[in-house]
Amino acid sequence: MSSRGFTPAEWTKIRATLDRDPGRYGLPERVYGSVVLASFNIRKLGEVQGRSDETWSFLANICSRFDLLAVQEIMGDLSGVRRIIAESGSEFSVIGSDTTGAFPGDLGLGERLGFMYRSSVIERGPVVSDVTYDRSKLLEILARNKDEIEAAVAPHAEYFRKLKAWVANGEQGSRPPRPNIKLPAFLTFIRQPFCASFKIVGHPGTRPYELMVVNAHLYFGNFMSDRRQEFDALMEWIMARVGQNDMNYYPNFVLMGDLNLDFDNPQTDRARIEKHIKTFNDSLTGVNVNFPFLDVHPRQSKVFRTNARQSETFDHIGLFSRDDRLPTFQDNETMGEQPRGPDFGVFNFVELFSQALHQKRFSELSENKQLALYERFEHDVSDHMPIWLRIPLPDPEKK
Image (cartoon, rainbow, N blue to C red; front, side, top):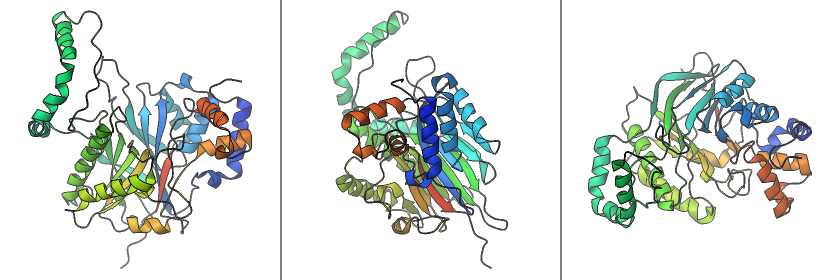
């Protein structure tokens, strides 16, 4: 038995266990009159040869349960994405970004961000773009933080000397390894977030939801301050857009992705993050900001964890809405009461694998067995679990 991945016989057990009760593991069912938005960091989603046929079928089965899915960690090779789309059915379409996170030709782990969507209920709008800070904004940041940036860079003078010598030598030999510099201010995203406009089409005679959806895989890195700077910068960009109140543009923004928020201790982190998010909203009127995964679901005893080790809530869906038909933070207290939604959850495939292969809850396994199971699927499936948000389709306008 391979130490990584599952055998065909084990996949048969997994499929049978899931089919018996998908809801037990948080997989949303298809409910007429609703759509499901989702986000899934699929670890190094690249070439087809990197995963087994059974794994591709499992991933396609999961991805096809969602109507609009933001995917992170798509590699340069798109054959894996094409495999998922082919197995999901002809009603699904996909769009993706260029590779980001590594300059072309340089060493680095570049990746794409993409959206998979069900074209029968989701229409793609005209706007598709990266999220960037322009040069004038960057120059302003540099000017405001000049002394602090110089102080952060100063201890690494030897690197800059070696880099200058390497360039002067025609870039022959090995490039000097880049140092880890703790910058005091945000300069640019480690991976440019990707956004696209969509319409969620309801029943005939209804006004669709108009959304600008931002797909992000933010910095993990060596310094917590870098994580928070990236999150702040993205929030600032979104809030500035929403704050323009240009109803001819897009009235609602949705942020979906692996935000790498520091949320290992909800007792303290939730209050800090919630207070911080509200600071962005102080100057806005008529905008509701809602991050449901910061709250405990009414049917749960603790916040959802989204990494496969079930220790962090890295992945989030955030709503920035002017449309009062979309769920507000007050609705988080009654999530799941209506079949059409609103509701939110996590597909806990870790629990599925444990039940199917060990007939025990994952928490009941010994630490060694937990680690052994994790090591078998973290590369073959993913080290993140998909998160989702269900919203009712628009109802006919009252006359």
